[in-house]
Image (cartoon, rainbow, N blue to C red; front, top):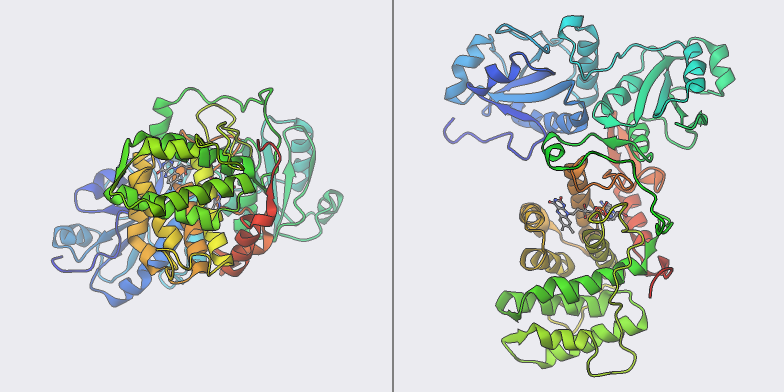
Length: 527
Ligand code: FAD
């Protein structure tokens, strides 16, 4: 309606329906739907919107089986539609089965049910499980339990994929939740088994439920012992198994070659994904200075200002080795002493390449990716190093609050983020990425008030990008895009509140400080 507040927008992980899209969206759909009829002027709907969005995000991976949608009955265009569904109170909820061939009213939703995320999620499961065969979404696996005795058959089968068996009590939903979390993933099959046959459980060493028993493609098997027994932790851990991948998005699938098994090429460098490598940071710096910015023949105006600020930040905060630190210092001194409005980039390249033969200055001119190496050419590399560079810089800024004193950036807690934002906008070669990053920055970067908030802001936004890119063509099968840090890297970072995953941000901050702190950067493979 005119002037009404929009409760849901295109950035939310759900489908917004209206009079014209509703019928063809729900009619003969290959997935089931859960639709909220709301009214943007109803106070309770306004209050409830964040919960509905949280739910939609929480079950986003279930999309092929069941999707979440909304329709605004306060919009005059939609009034007639809401009337057809006999909606009298807001919010009202209706389930729709897959493949409905008629203009269904939708199945009712338990009237007095709590509407918190966990309860609605369980109603969704019951709805899927109780749907008659002819209206089962093909993507929805059978949610019925297997017998504990069948587990030993699975173990001896040597399937080419992982099998995870969730052992649980009959009233637990964890197994079915994890099963649905993987409907878009290859490489893993999830089953559930009840804890009724105590003898079978004992033989497998299952002492408490819920617990997750994992069978590897090579036949090894065992309990995942060191995970908190929560749905979100089971799922995020299972997503990190090598070879477990989100299925290619339809759009990406058209343009990419058939998925290949990750190849272990001869010059693959083994590395520890929980460590930082100087070779990545220096290769990234080399690419940034000698290739990316060098596509601009002269720097002037905004571009020059961004470049100067970036060099100031690098000089003050980059945890580099002495020969790199000297290069950054020399660049910084030179730029500060140059009152020019316009600098030919060749002059900067001369400095970077140390044409003046100043002693003790050097920056590798080789791309040597380690933690950022891709399993195929074109994957990972520079963009990976750029993320790592800026995470490192935000962490260093928080560790040294006075580092930017006496520079043009002093007293600005957002200096690193804002410089990153301007760098991405003016120089980052991937223009699509730059557009996406700019819109995230516009949304909330200005709310960052402290150095620690800057560290967490970048972490959060990077995870948002990871979520968007899971299954995209640029995803390396060896480095799946997942919520980071994963539970195995930082168990304390993860928890659940009322059945919904929640980060412990104090722990995340501690983890980021340690991961991107300078003491921890390995020199292996660095020139
Ligand atoms: P990356 O995402 O590059 O991550 C590098 C490393 O950072 C990881 O290996 C991990 O060690 C660590 N890490 C992962 N998540 C986090 C986190 N949340 N916090 C801290 N550290 C973390 N590609 C697109 O296709 N579309 C885009 O719109 C897009 N936008 C981008 C915007 C920016 C600003 C940048 C720098 C890159 C963008 N990219 C985009 C590239 C994409 O994000 C990846 O960098 C690229 O696909 C390589 O992925 P990767 O597997 O090396 O991991």
